[in-house]
Amino acid sequence: MAKAIINALEAFARGENHHAAGLLGCHPVSGGFVFRVWAPQARAVSVTGDFNFWNPEDLPMKPIGFGVWEAISSFAKDGQAYKYCVTRADGTTVYKSDPYAFAFARLPENSSLVCRIDGYRWNDGQYVRRSAARDPLRSPMNIYEVHLGSWKQHEDGSFLSYTELAEELVPYCADMGYTHLELMPVTEYPYDPSWGYQVIGYFAPTHRYGTPKEFMAFVDACHQAGLGVILDWVPAHFPKDECGLFEFDGSCCYELSDPRMNEHPDWTTRIFDFGKPEVQSFLISSALFWLEQYHVDGLRVDAVASMLYLDYNRPDFIPNKYGGRENLEAIDFLRKLNKAAFGAKKNPIMVAEESTAFPLITKPDYDGGLGFLFKWNMGWMNDLLDYMEKDPLFRKWEHNKLTFQMTYAYSENYILPLSHDEVVHGKRSLIGRMPGEYDMKFSNLRAFYAYQMAQPGKKLNFMGSEFAQFIEWDYHKGLDWLLLGYDRHRQMHEFVRELNHVYLDTPAFWNNDLGWEGFTWCDPNDAERSMLSYLRWDTEGRGYLVVCNFCPVLRENVRVGLPMPCRVVPMLNTDETRFGGSGVELTPARTQKIAANGFDQSVELVSPPMSVSYYRLVRLPTGRRTKNNKERTRKRNEV
Image 1 (cartoon, rainbow, N blue to C red):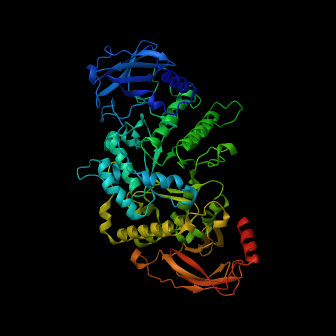
Image 2: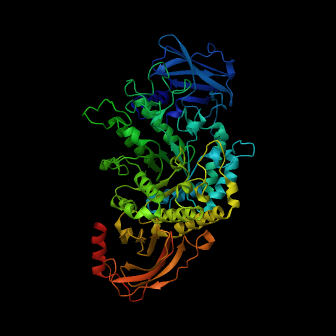
Image 3: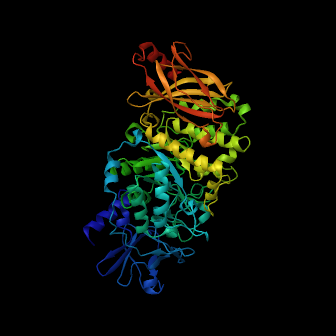
C-alpha cells in the first residue's frame, strides 16, 4: 500500500486528516474507481450497485487498517448508484449510503452516486482575492437567508434548479442590496420537513436542485455578482435513517455509545461523538470541503448550544470529568474546527447559532474562546420581537428591551438575526406579529427594520420579509410573490431595497461595530413617549443620528442633545409616502447652544408617527467636539 495512503489513514485515526474526503468515499483510479469506507466493527463489507447488478457478493472489500475497508471496481462508471452492504458483528446485514459520497440519487432512493467533481473552471478569482483582503468585521454584511426549494417554484410546484436560481435569485439579491446569501442546508438530506437539518450526505449538495457542478456554478455566479455564500452546516446531530450514519457498522460508530447521552430527547436524533478522532476528521473534512471545493465563504454552525451543554433539554445527564455540565469534547472540537477553517481559508465567515450566555464564542482559542468570527444575537431578536409585538400603548413599560442589548453588544461579534425560525410553527410572519390595523402593521415593520439596520452588529433577514409576506413560511410552497401587486407590499419591497442600499452607503453602520467608539446614546430613557435616539460613528469620525418613535403619535419639538455644533441632514424616513407612510417631512436643522441629554448642544426635530429617521451630521466650521463633551460621552456610555 502506498506510503501516502498509510499516512492519510494514520492522520485520519488521530483526528488530524482534515481532507479525509480524498481518502474515503469513491474516487477514480487507473482502470476504474476505488471505494473506501470506515466501519471498524463490521464483520465484512461489500460494495453493491448498478455496476455489479446490486449483487453484494461480487465486490467484497478488504480491511486496510485503522478500521477502513477498500475495494476497486473496473466496471463502475460516473453517475452510477451504489451502497455499502455492511455485515454487522451479529451476522445481520444493512445497506448504507456512503458517508463521503459527493452525490446522491433522487428520492425516494437513498443510494450514493459515483461522481467526479473535478474539472469545473471557476470564474470568481477577482471576488476571491477581494474577499481574502477584506476584514469581515469592518465590512458591510446584510444577509438574505434562503430556503432554495421555497424561494420560488415553477407553476407545477417543482423546484428551481441551481442553474435557474443563479439566473433569478442572484441578480435579485444583488439588486436588493444584500451582501451575502445564507442557504439553509444543502448538504444531502432524506426528509423534506427537516428543511435540511437532518443530514446523511455531509459532502454532497442535495440532488433536489441539480448536480454538484451546477451548485459550483451557482456559487460562482454569486461571487461574480459580488455576493458571498454562507451555508448552514449541522455537526451537532444526525438522523436515525437506516441508510445514514446511524449505527453505521452495527455499533455506535459516529455517535456516542452511552444510550443515556447519545440521543437528543426532543429531536430523536443521534449526537456525534466529538471526542472520537475519526469523527473529528470526518466533520472537519466536511467543513473544509465546502470552503475549498465549493468556494463558499463561510459556515453557519447550527445548534451550537446543544453541543456545548451536556444537559441541553435533558433533565438527567452524565456530568463531565470535573462534575460540570459543559461538553468538554465538543468545546475542544469547535476550537479545532475553527482553527482548521481559518488555516484553510483567508477570513472564513464562521458563525455560531448559539442562544445562551456561554462566554467567548467569538474570541480566539488562544484567548480561551471558541474561535468563531460571529455569533447570532438571539437575545436581541427575542427582546425586539417581544417589544414590537406589544400594543404601542404598553411599550413604555417594556422600554428596556430596546436598550438592554447595548449592555452586552460588544461582548461578542454579533449578527442580528430575523431568521426562518421566527416565522414558523405558529409564531406568525413578521408582519403578522405587528400590532394594529393593516397600515399600522406596515409602519411598525418598517420602523423595526430601520432600527435593526442602524444597530451595532451585522444583519440577517429571512426571505419573504422584504415584502412583508403575511402567511408563515411553508417549505412546501414558493413565496407569495403575487403580493407585490398590492401597494403596501410593493412599497415595503421598495423600502427594504432603499434601506439596504443606505446601509451599504453608510460606513458608520458597519465599519465601527467593535466598541463604544462607534456608538453614542443621545437619549435612551424616553420610555414615556416610546422614543430613543443615538449616534453611529464611522472610523473616520463621521456621525449619523438615529431617532426612533415607536408610538403612532406625531412628536413635534423633539429636542436631541448632540456632542458638537452641527447641521443634521435627513437621509431616510420610514414614514415617507412612497413607502406607505403618512408623509410627515423631515427638514434639515441646526444645533443650538441649549443643553439637552447631558450635552451642551442640541437640535429640535419632528419625529413622524411610528417611525425611525436617519440624519447625517455635518460639522459646522467652528464646531469641534470639546474635551468636556468627549469625556461626558465616555461616561454616559460606560453607564
